[in-house]
Image (cartoon, rainbow, N blue to C red):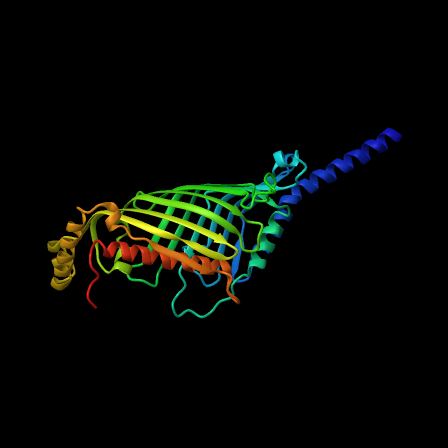
Length: 354
C-alpha cells in the first residue's frame, strides 16, 4: 500500500511538471506579446515561443513590431527567429550574462511625414524596460545573421529606398565581462551588400554601458553602381545618372555625447543621362541641361580621385535637453551623408539653376 501511494504521488508530480512544461510556452508567449504592446507608439506580437530549459534558452519565432499609424508594408522591425540564452562561457567565469542571435531581421527606418501630427514616441527607458522584460539578464553577445536595414523616404519625388542586405553583425563583450579596465571594451563588426551591389564593412570599439555610449567607428561602402540609386540622386541632386561608381568612407567618434568625424565620398566615371533619351521623356530644356552637365562630368573623369572627392565634417552634441539622443544622432548622420553626397556629385556635375 505504501509503495502504491508513493508511486501515485510520484506520477502526479511528473504529470504536473509535464503540464507546466506544455503550458509554459503559451504563458511566455502571452507575456512577450503584452510586453511588446506596452511600448508607447508601437504594437507588436510574436507567432510562437519555444523553450530549451536544458540550455537556459528560449526562441521567439515571427516577431513583428509596427509603428502606430505607420506604413503596414514596412514594419519597424520584423525578425524571423530570435534566440535568447545564457552565455555559458561567461557563466563558467562566474558571470551571469546572456547572448542574443537574430535570424533574418528587417529594420525599416521610415522618414516622418513633413506635416504629420506629433505621435507618441517611446523613451530610452521604455526601450530598456522592453529588453529587460524579454531577457532579464544583461546581454553580453549579440549577433545578426542575414539581416536587412532600409531607409525609406516617401516625402520625396521619386520615393527613396536605400537598403543593406545580407547583413552580418557580431557584437562582443557588451557587458564588459572580459576587459573591465578598457575604456572601449566592446567590439562590433558589420558586413553587408548595399543597393547597387556595394560592399559594406564596418568596425567599432564601444562602451555601451554608459547612458550615451562612447565609440570609435570606421565604415566603408565601396563599388556602388550609381544608376541603382537614381531615385535618391533625382530627389537630392535633381538630375539622372547614366553611369558611375561611388565609394564612401566615414570615421566617427562619440565621446561624452560629443560627436566628431567625417564622411568622404569618391565618384568615378560619372555620366549624366544621354540627351536624346531625355528629349523624348522629360522635355527639351531638361535634356539640354543634362547634356551640358554631362560635358562637365566627362571632363571630371580624367581627374585624380582625391581631386574629385569631398570631405564633409560631422560634429555636434547629441545630449540636447528634451530630445531623444538616438534620434538626434540619426538626424545628424542623415543630413551629413546627404550633404556629402550632394557636394561630391556637384564636383562631377554642376547644380541646376533655380
